[in-house]
Length: 501
Image 1 (tube, rainbow, N blue to C red):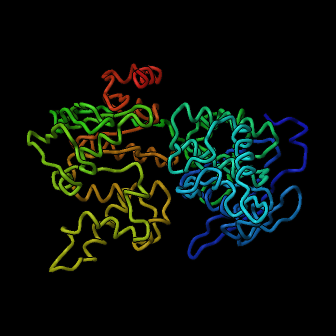
Image 2 (image 1 turned 90 degrees about the horizontal axis):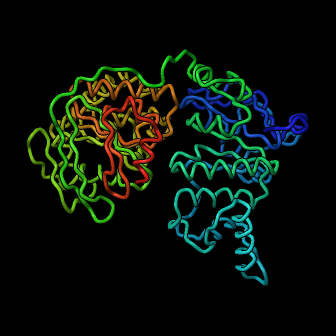
Image 3 (image 1 turned 135 degrees about the vertical axis):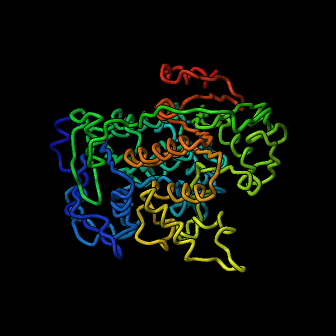
């Protein structure tokens, strides 16, 4: 934790009365922030609260409309990314800024190559890279291409790149979103070590359990305004959630009494190579069946086979007693199966198209008349979902890339609801989504189950699994290794024991 001497020192960073306006949107309104050397400040808030805008100002990607930035007590211009780096600020975005076909070493020194005698000094770059990895307590081959590294290893490369630029302030945006529990533990250990070296760290995450493990103070934004900064030890979980959402949230998971009917989706002997091995299960009408396990256990690979995104080698899929011949996602959609992919930006949405066009893509047959899209009908149908799902958009022609994660997820859900799918697969439905919007997504999932639909939900967050599922299947190395039917009596430890079996 921050010592009294550190806390009394000149702040590493001060942001005073920061405002940022975009056409028709006031993203930040008089926001103030301070960070001491050797401190971890958690920056929290719902999707769309202004967190991303604030860190993009720090990173030189945005210029504030108004306000003052002080680094080590000096007024500092951060109007470009290079100015931000020169000021000792390193930004590690959720989407990494690595060149996949270059090695770890090449990425770290890209644009700042070590030159000797007119040539790149490979041995010196390799030596410094190994020193950085040793400092971070990890072993990575400096000459391994980043495309071949795990997500956790790529993240270490990003941190090493920032440290090689002599960063004294690190901003980490959702750093644990795609990591296993073991990788998260290692990440938090690295953060603690960097804090002990005197670095200031701004840590953004929707996983509140991490915040309480790592943060010295918590700062909360809501609707572009700074609503409070508290010492972590003085703010309990319920108080933090209330500060974030602006209202008292009695429970993180809505309660329900399920009405479970007959089997609807029956999967038998599903297999593909070593990723999915003889997987069999059934999902009943009105049931929320959770599929969990460690990253790489085969969960996503299994649902991609069901949806036809990958071709299965063995097995059968039956819906309401009818054997389905699924060779492509088109076949699955026609059969009444919808998939909300875990990668909503890469696979669930066309980011450079409008939200209305994204909604219409799988539903073109419904909206096409005489070879032309009936945009009025498309707008009318999408408008209904904008209201019922409370999708926050300025207009239907807003580009999908401009929406917050929670609103992007609602757009993906809207297009499958318009298809009236009987089986809906949610793959990590709340990844990168704030606690208030999570609750709304949970309610929507429960409402769909109440309509008699079969719900298959993949989640790495064990509290989410235990809070939402009627039944849980646990996977390990491509196989189902356990089933939990009495979910209310189960613990996270029970699920983890099955996940590592």
